[in-house]
Image (tube, rainbow, N blue to C red; front, side, top):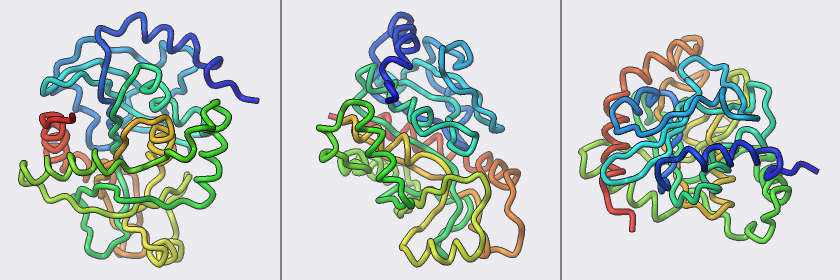
Length: 275
C-alpha cells in the first residue's frame, strides 16, 4: 500500500527547515499567472528539482518553483507550475501541492488554471470561479487516495469548492470591478483535447468549462480540511464551438493577454480579510 507520508518525508522535512514563516494561504499559479511571483514580496524560493521525490513539470510555462511570499499582509506559499496526470504521473503525485500545504498548516488553498469554454456565453479571456465540478470516476479514485493517506475519517467532510472562500473571491472581484463568471468545471485526464462530440456530451452534463488539471489537488486539499476554491482563465472555445483547431499556443496567447486582470483578481482576494 502506498504510504504518502513515508514517500514525501524528506521533502516535507526540508521545507519545514527552510521556511521563513508559517504560510497561511497556498496558491497554484496556473497558465496566465506564471509571473505572479515577480509582483509580490518573495522571501524564499525552492526549485522543485531540488526536492526529493518532487515530479518534474514538462509543460511550457510551468517553471517548477515554490515560493514563500507575502502580499496584503498574508503569508503565502506559491506553486509556480503544477503536476498534470497526463504527463505520466500518478494521482498521488498530482496532489503533492495540496499535501505540502496540509503539512505546513495552511488553511486556505486557491488553484488557478486555463480551461476551455463549454458554455456558449463564455469567451476567451473570461475568468470563471468554480461552483462545482464533474469528472468520470474521479470521486472514487480520489476518495480511495484519501483513504490510502490514512484520513478515511475525513471522507464525509469533503467540501469543494469552499462556500466561505468563494464568497471572499466574489467580493474581491466586485471590489476590483472584474467580471467573474461562475460555473461547473469538467475534469478530463488528457493528454488530448476533447472531440466536438465529447464537448456536446459534457455540455449536456451541465459543465461550463473543461480542463486537465486542478480537480485532483483541489479535491484532495478539501479532503484534508483546507478551505479550497479554484479559478479558471477561459483561454479558448472548446472543440466544435469555434471553427479552428485547438492548440497550446492559443492557450498561452490568451493567458498572456489576460495575465494583468488575473493578477489583479488574485491580489484583490489576498487583500481581503479571511477571518
